Image 1 (tube, rainbow, N blue to C red):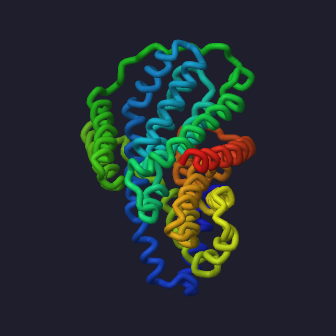
Image 2: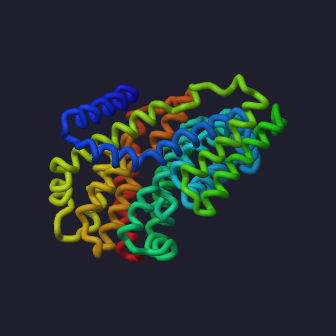
Image 3: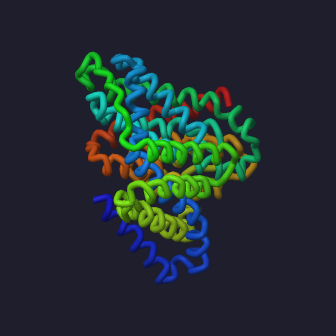
Length: 384
């Protein structure tokens, strides 16, 4: 079903270009804008898949499970802290790509249900992406209009971020982690096993560390991911060439993102901006702005949703721009395409044969989005 949606979106975008609804120059500009993003997506998924093959994720997962000592509460805290930290300091897409395999490997190695661990990853990938500009691509887009430094941004968003994480943890525990959901009182920590190929393990670990290091030094995510992919793929080319195949390329995501950035500019140029102006109103209500951002993010994806709405908000209205970031960061939890992180997460779950009940995903995500949105905007208004 998702593959049909992706292909259909691309076909619709190409029809818009062919019929002139989207001028050729605008289409080229839009695709040029997402080019580095597509490079990042392809490269980081290659890194994640090969790192999984090198057993790096298995090793990390096993050590987390051992540290939890069979206690689900301890494991829950470890997993939520880990996911939140990675999201805040690296970005939500890194969490979706690199941390999801860690959580799924932890489930397999410890006999734990995979869904609670997987949901911890994707929910916190979105809801923990408020604190720093690098935490979410929407934050980076918003920095151009906000005129804040990184520390100034964090000073406005620390309280919303704490509230957002706290609400997410509460929803995770009630709907996925409590004993009635996981059935067992304790889990069995795995026995640590040696890796099959230490060279591949070391190269994959080095590639991931290189990616993190380059991001911390401020390099673009596309450059950092490509450099990491060269290191990891090079090691596999020398040691295990048979594991390299075209199946590593996430063509589904490339098709979806390309179609998305053809369709949304067409809609914006044909009445979407006027509609957004009407929806958010002229009274400056941050709750209304955040709610519109959340709704549009779940319809078309949070990146184009943010771009469509921020263009109709006055530059001087910093509070509403921050509220819009809350809506497009915290609430894209209902549809599989609401954020790129969610798409990456679904892709990883599919590759690991983890079944995600769509009805449960939508209903619990809608509940968290609603409660998280209201409480987080409240924190922004009170403390931001």
